[in-house]
Image (cartoon, rainbow, N blue to C red; front, side):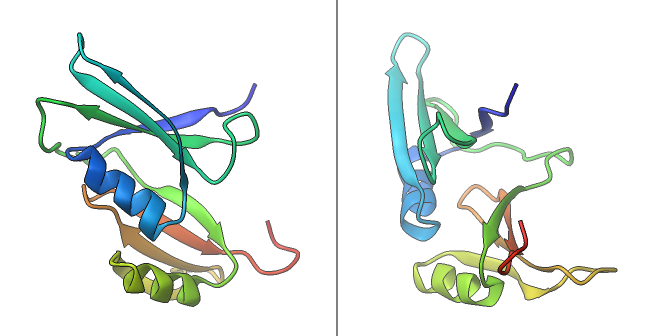
Length: 131
């Protein structure tokens, strides 16, 4: 078994695709419209679905926004340099909500950014030899 994808609901699919592809550098892997159900599924990631987990962005055509609730945590991405990643994300129009620095009660360098719907993405610095 392996993890295939994580699904999040988004209010504006074009805005979300611009963030995940243009700001975070993911690729749009596939997109399917379901007119009878009034929704679209778009899968984004850093490589083919056959090789790793991806995000499924679900856009229900009649819903402009969602209450994120308090159960959702975040999506985590490995980056070689969290501060540099924050700078690049900010330069591309992304919102950094926690600057790069050591995690509370630990040494791992992390940062957080937020997508257009308010979902948090954690950037975890992974240097040479760390995975």
